[in-house]
Image 1 (cartoon, rainbow, N blue to C red):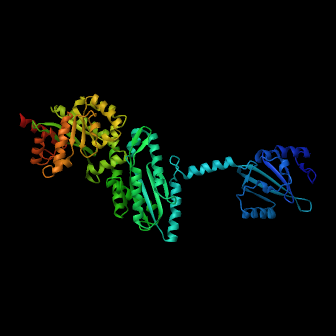
Image 2 (cartoon, one colour):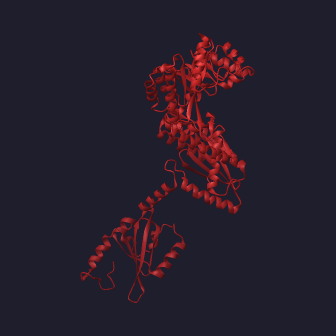
Image 3 (cartoon, rainbow, N blue to C red):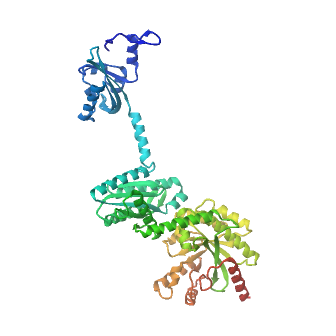
Length: 581
């Protein structure tokens, strides 16, 4: 390094002149790379930190122009701006990418100062710089976390909102149409609750990949949270384009998934809103797609629905009903309960005696009055409210059974419907044991009914739980049999005692040969497996006679009685007992 052109500076406090040796050590031992060039911008000195950072020794660069370090990433405009700043302000600093001796490029923060002599003419340029690779990586990681979903690496809600707003501005400027699809996975909550969050997370990652592969590179796929995804198609010819993509997504997502040792299935319910017809604001488009998605759920799931204005009304009503349901469940107490169990008798076809009662949940809302179970049970299952509500049903059913026993009715079993979430909840066995003990009941006093579709979800887990319930001595039944896709090979391994023939086959048994054939085959199948057959929905004498002829063991339906509250049920049972004596 050349000696200073001016006398060494003096420290004002100590009156202590800084020697050239001290300046040299500061220069050489600096952790920042320092490069000095002359007025012609030829390198005349470089410190040890420069060598460590670039790989070049001082001897290799002295006499060279600093451009030997350039990576080629910056264009003429960049360097023109740099020299303009040096000319005006004698200084420039900023980020620049350079190349090391080994050819690798890296980002650095560069500060250049102009040194002038006593005449004000440029004598040197002094540059000092540091490698900022680590800080840039950290910044890039923070940006990734801020705008991308950690699990799936798709854009998150924040990025989605920004990109959607930009896409809408482009559509407005260029007169294009846009489709927004809100996608919710069917049955995901059951998988997550049953197999754990790790399995659920892996499933979400696979779904994300399939969604990305189902659309164009220019389309936006994002995860809003949970099992909700969104797809934005910024350039479509019309609704038919969106429908075509939705069909493609349905097929892709519905294919089976291997997660560890588990073979899983899920399907998408898709709601679609269109710009500009269904809204020009991001929030409105998303809300309308959400309404359409719930319509897809109500239409049977695994389908797509386009938004229509009437859906907002239905969605608003559903939200209000959900809020009312939450309030009703949270406020359950002996003094205040909007729920009740109505009981429907089950009649033995041979003796005509009442051998069982099915407990059917009813809700009387202060706002809506009597709400159909078809409405509120579906909402409870979607929102997870079915768990606390189902727990109440078990306790209430046991209480009612105890009451029947106190009135001398000790030969009638009470059947309780169990949801998929309840069946796989870790506390189910303890809950049932506690309720039975509390009301001094035997396991044989109750029967648990599981729908065919529930039994077929995760068969290994279902079999394990049913085995434990059966070992307790509890009667088990498959409800709605014939509406699902049971494997007979699997069915014979379940520890069940009863098959309940779905009412849809009983309704037209007298006029529809197919229904008659299904009933005949099912009763024969059940008996061959040693099971008792129960037919639901029996409403006419002709249906009773037909089913009795086929050998059906137990009948249930309006022909005998509608579901009744406890007092009416008790009177009915006493009347039946008196008539048989």
